[in-house]
Length: 66
Image (cartoon, rainbow, N blue to C red; front, side):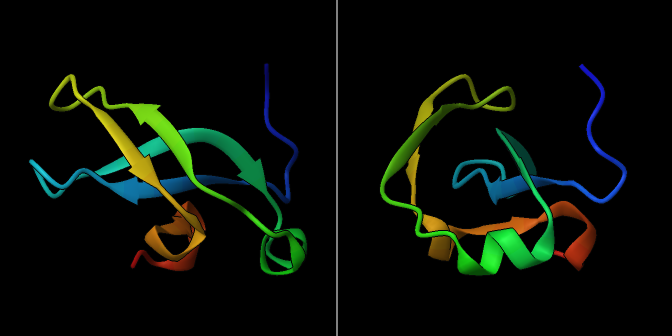
């Protein structure tokens, strides 16, 4: 499924490898900043572990990182 042109992937850093990984969510900057996000989990394609993350751990891919 193609993402909307103004949508960016929500990313976190793998605590094992330090690489940015996608969370499976997308958002535009306005929605991202307004949306409350609780605790989530993602299966990491880098280290094969499951990581818990919250909004403070995440960034929009096109925002330059965390």
